Length: 64
Image (cartoon, rainbow, N blue to C red; front, side, top):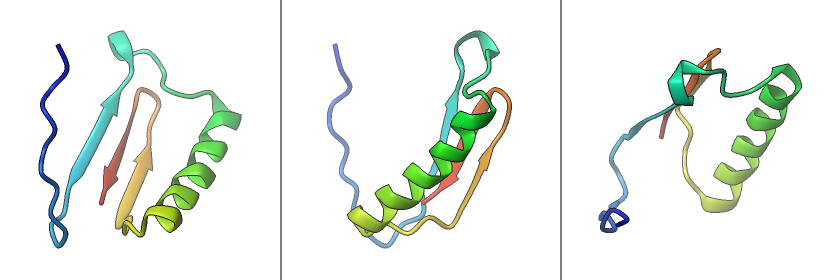
C-alpha cells in the first residue's frame, strides 16, 4: 500500500536522501553527469530551489 500524500507548503527546507539497494552503486560515471543536468532542468521547470546536492557512490542527497 503506498504512503498517503504529504502536504508540502512552500518556504521550508527539505533534505532528501536516496540510497541504492543493498548499498549498491546508484549511478555509473556518465549517468551522474546526466543526473545533474536532469536535476537542474527539473528545478527550473518546477520552480523549486535546489540549495545543495551531492552524488556519492551509493546514494545522492538533495537540499531543496
